[in-house]
Amino acid sequence: MLPTLFIDGQEGTTGLRIREMIAERDDVELLLISDEERKDPAARAAFLNRADVAILCLPDDAAAEAVGLIQNPKTRVIDTSTARRVAPEWIYGLPEVSRQQKEAIRVADRIANCGCYPVGYILAVRPLVEAGLIDPQTLLTVNAASGYSGGGRRMIEAYHAAAAEANGGSGNAALAFSSYNLAGGHKHLPEMTAYSGVERPPLFIPSVVHTYCGMLVATPLTAPQLARDVDCEAIVDIWDEYYADAPFVQPLRGGGALRDGRFLDIEGCNGTNRIELCAFGEPESGITLIGRLDNLGKGASGNAVQCLNLMLGRDEQTGLRR
Image (cartoon, rainbow, N blue to C red; front, side, top):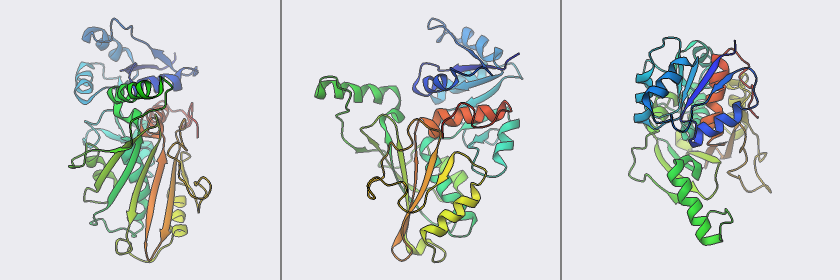
């Protein structure tokens, strides 16, 4: 019999992308709940307890409610909400965060899927901390930009409405680049601190841009923040070694990621589960680390499917694009 999968929140942005990734697969049975039953706790409970794996694509409170509905000890859970990412009884669902993480995910019953912004920060910074290039006590700054799908249904509707009003429904978002959460305290800070190796929360400035998907996460390192003189090539060497067994992490050298030798397009990894890591600058003036990914791919749905593959004993790349 095929393993069964239920997506609680199958009509949300993350859930819909997971359904697209699973749709053509014949190695898992997807359980679909009707529109009439989606908000019925008893019906949801029946699906949750029938599934071998349940993926929760819900806000924090609704995800907590879903976990409480699960009584079947054999139902394994991947929670894409924020609430349990640093909970000690849950395994952090970022397979590349350490060499032991894939095996931990394979055998776990409770997985907390990673957040989108933290992926670009953690995977860029952690190998350098472990290599002794970054002091764990330093204060880092993170400047990041995401496509508007990262804001969920309300933000998507706002951008589409603005596009319809300004462009006659052409689909080109009219809202401008906007920074937000400027007072601090972003919900991603706990996991960025817990898993990066840097013990102080970074000064994190997120922004949303007028594209549906895509993400750039930039972490500048000033010369005093580097433990020794090191150039971009040496940083990429460290990434190459650290991620030698990580097919979805692609360190890039020189200007390999740049368009026309100048521009780093935010949409460069869209439609994939890939994250590209780049380093730009010089030791004496500072080096900027950048992670580029699809915020709905490696930053959400794709990573959840990667974790699902590991939990089911499949090749982690099954059904995913690099």
